[in-house]
Image (cartoon, rainbow over all chains, first blue to last red):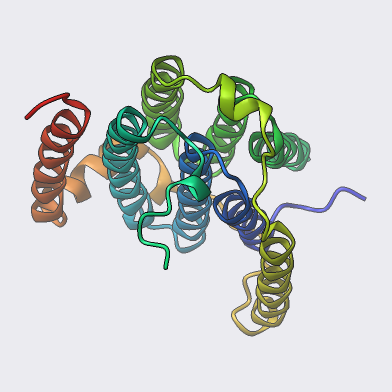
Length: 103
Length: 169
């Protein structure tokens, strides 16, 4: 009944995590949770990279996962800095209340 | 056999934590569930014999990024935001498009699983032993220039976040 885990299992898991993250980015109003959803999306990418690294028996995928984590750290730092600046100016953390560019 | 059980445990932690992250009302609860999801992803790295990335995931994500998130949640007043509607008005459109993309991706994974023979279980070989040493070998020889560029990116991010969060420049 318990069959061995293959690369396809990891691909499906990664796709599901990516879609949950995308849903969070598109549907939530709170910017803090939108930033958390971006972290979920980047983790889904990393699961894919690690699964293919195991499949092809090369560590290149793990190296790229390290670079993805680096970019995720930079993105979180700058994004939260922007969030603090925006909260200081507009007193809101809701994405649909920041509508200066809306026609 | 044990690998299968552990995969499903970690997959449940990851997906359950992710779903709870995007549905909780309080941002602190979301951050806690995100920690659960990230720890589940770390367990999946361990199952895939990526021990170095397992450590990096725990130290950097759970220890570093989540600490940053919790600090910002405490700096920014989120009480107002927790009382109002949590999803925007196009949430049904977002759900429908996410499900449609998920259907397409699943369809192509199922088709590609046969074409590329991805369905065969990965064999363990001595090539993957000594994970950290092998990563260091490849990172500091073949990928040295991207590694240095990553350090410049981190410097830019540090300066940029300080400038963004400063009151007056």
